Length: 294
Image (cartoon, rainbow, N blue to C red; front, side, top):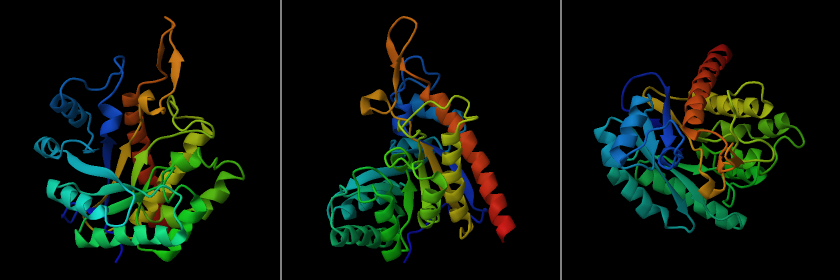
């Protein structure tokens, strides 16, 4: 049985839900225009900005404020995911995205891990989306497609910067790599959004215009949205959550300001809001593409 889409229980047409990762908003630098203060004040600011859900935030507080809430976790061994899924279900999280394995597993070990995730997702009636990420079983695009061949019911969280930068997708032709990844895009049901170029996994994209690498990410997002829309049912939604990380994690680049101080190169809050605008454009394009093809 395939992993379910996130669903709100209504008869509304399938839609994009514009979320954000807690890690994108709870450690912003002082110069950022993003919300600051207590946990409640920050989440109230997130809500006021029109964002609809938060990954890895306090579930009870999110619900009180009318925000959706999802989660993430790491799974290293068969059997570990059960208690994690049970806890997430009890907390009312709508889905989990998962780092699975360390990337050194044999084919048999990889398949056992995936099977455990799929079985657990069905058992707890909770969407579990395996993430595309370095140092996991999905760190290589060839292996990931092989996993899809074995388990077509799998569904993914697309954290595509790990492939775009880590595997230098433009080397040998972006279009070739994107075509090869079609089975993955068709099964992507959550996106942790971060844009990188061929040499840096996270970069400030300015206004997002006239940058080939930005166009490549928009293409991957549009393909993923189209895959979702092709079979989505009433009430289904696709979570798109910017995950722009701080220099603490060696993601946000540092530059010297006029005073000679090392600061983040841009405002990750404003960039996240821009990402959401881009995602809305991509979703509209995907919707038009699906209607045209139909």
